[in-house]
Length: 499
Image 1 (cartoon, helix red, strand yellow):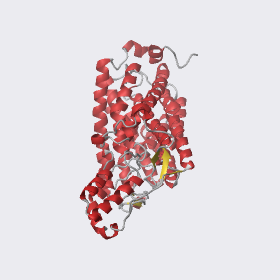
Image 2 (cartoon, rainbow, N blue to C red):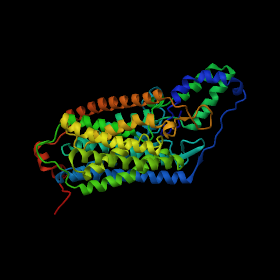
Image 3 (tube, rainbow, N blue to C red):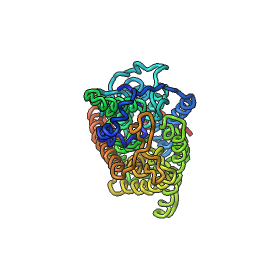
Image 4 (cartoon, rainbow, N blue to C red):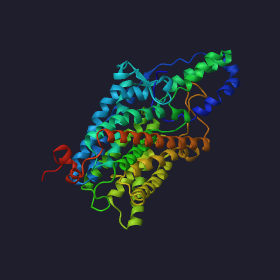
């Protein structure tokens, strides 16, 4: 299988594959009249335009959005260092992506295909203006360059999120080495395991061949078609739903950030010296850019400009708004005053939580999800800092890790059409048409639980090994003297402000 696709789910696939022999027997009479599935690849200019805009919006999330959001939260002596770390991460990962990252994430990986892709598109070999990739609709395709560029922005922002967990004390050279290793051994395999599949036309083609082979009694052909139908990423075959990156981006980065904060250790003066944000104005500007860019992140993940795109836009609006209000009112009740920092942190938590559910939940479900995520992440941030004394500088795990877990689990519930959800896609029951599979609560939720647990363990253990390796070779942390002076001058020889 050489086709590729970024997933909106297909959680029904494992159950449907199990039922294929029975379904084939029931349909044997009709299958005898089947002919091979033939399709045309149609590219819509509107889809291309939307994906181009979405790609630019996601880049806007990272630079300058995330850079300003993080930069405002650190002390002024470290502002420039954070801006540099985020910007440099984006530059380095973009080059890695077109060199080998895209190939590892979105090509067939042979015997390792459940876990990672291969090297068939190393240096974008075989990609040109004529090559296409599937969307979610039969017969609707995108230029492969559009897909490459869109996915590149995801690869760039994910490791940049990790930076906030150990801001103000990490060595710049060590960070760059870690980022290269982390995207190679953690991010690209995770993207493949969650989002790699053949696309709706490929499934229709192979399902039709399977039914024809079963009807003809051709066991070898039937086994080959069944194997092709199952040639997807590991979590995809588990039935995990992740519309735009709850597992791949947020849980993955949040857990890696927590591990990094623990391995690198606390900042000098943690919980003793004042470490208040130097510019909440910058943080608010950054958060606003993140919110705007997130429409490209979530709605763009549909890969088409259609009704699902509109649903993702609405959900991205209301989940963030609900979470911002939820965090604000919770903090107001607990601490006596509502803060701007809490308000924007809550809005980001809502965006994180709705990411895996953006095209699956209904708007009211997204509101409820936002309310839970805002209050839940507020509690998680306070608990991690006070109970465990872990110096997650900018609350990366408390917001992205916990918010991602809440959103991933809730997706398995909110997708239920009875709750206003869009339902689980079924591309196999009627090859060539997209139906809605029967919703089974236990099956849907368990797929999400398995995906969350796997992501936490895979990212946590893998990141720990990589942090330790980098620390052993070049050291992760600057000296205490450099940390007290500030990384702007100590690491980069310049200041964010000269006044």
